[in-house]
Length: 323
Image (tube, rainbow, N blue to C red):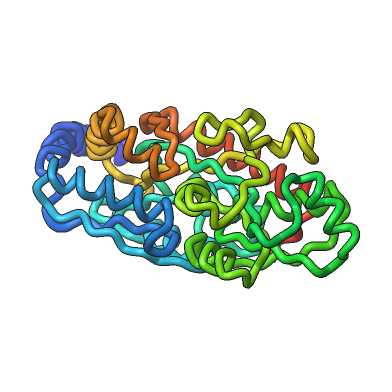
């Protein structure tokens, strides 16, 4: 009898919550919003976050502030957002590093990439490539493999994210070569050392690499996607050179802590969709190395789950042991 007596009360709460949800979305945000990114200032993720923050600030009339929390493979940033109140005042603009790769690369991850977050929207992809300093006497991936085999242990290759980490280990595993992998906290720092000649090779994203390619401070050897890039149509793929069927594309998206009210998630998603549909925005992001690809909360949720499976499999295939 007691359980039956509670039903009207619970139903009343449910009705009140349903009626209140639209009102919550209309009044959101009530104070400044922090957008956390897992990479350093100057990275393509950081630049994308700042573009989005500026747009949302204009739309919502409250400050949207970008906070960089680099380190630990992005887990510092993701963990902070996962623990935040689910009211939309702390958000995360991140990539596959935190939500696809971390569970396979690290023994201990302080959050669940599926259960601890509300996916809001996928905003694009970050294509990457393998680059070399012009001083290195190679101009192709085949030449790189031959040079590495002739000089075992003498080459090093830098990376600033999980895409580079996985690509390097997969390349070493398949080609049976000895190259030292040099991790950095972000791609801009690694690019600085590549240009300075401190490391001869790197796996940068397009956003970091394109400005240096234009002034010929670095040389592009191969892109990571199975198909050639429209941005660099003359650069071959790893698939067509030394790694058949290799296909890796980093993605970026906006998340909130688990439990974010659906109306707030949907409103954020609508504003992002409106922003990303503007030709001038798409062109600006493309020029910075971002291929715009929008999906809303439900589609993004399914995509994140499928990418977690894909990247975990790639990590195992590359023979990478969790750290």
